[in-house]
Length: 122
Image (cartoon, rainbow, N blue to C red; front, side, top):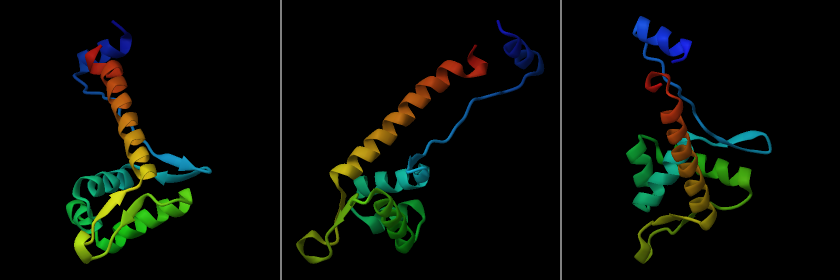
C-alpha cells in the first residue's frame, strides 16, 4: 500500500479525484458542461425551448449559447424549423452530433480513469 492510502485510512479521509472538461477552439473555451448538456437536451427533445426548460434556462440564453458555439466553429450545430408541419423542431447537424459524441466519449474515458485512480479504492 502507498503512504497516501495509509494516511487516508488512518485519518478516515475521503479523497477523490475530480475534473471538468471543455473543448477549446483557437485557445478559447468553446464547449464545456453547460453547452454539452444543452446539445444533449436538444438532441433528446428535438426542441431548443424544451431543452432550455429542462435545464432551467431561458430560450434566449440557450439560443445565445448555441450562437456563441456556432460563431466559434464557423459552422451550424443546430438546424431549426419554425412552425408549419414540423412545429418548431430543432435537431443537431452532423457536426453537432459529432461534438456531442466526442464529449460523451471524453466523459466515459475520464470516468474509467477516475475509477482506476481513486485514492480510496487503492
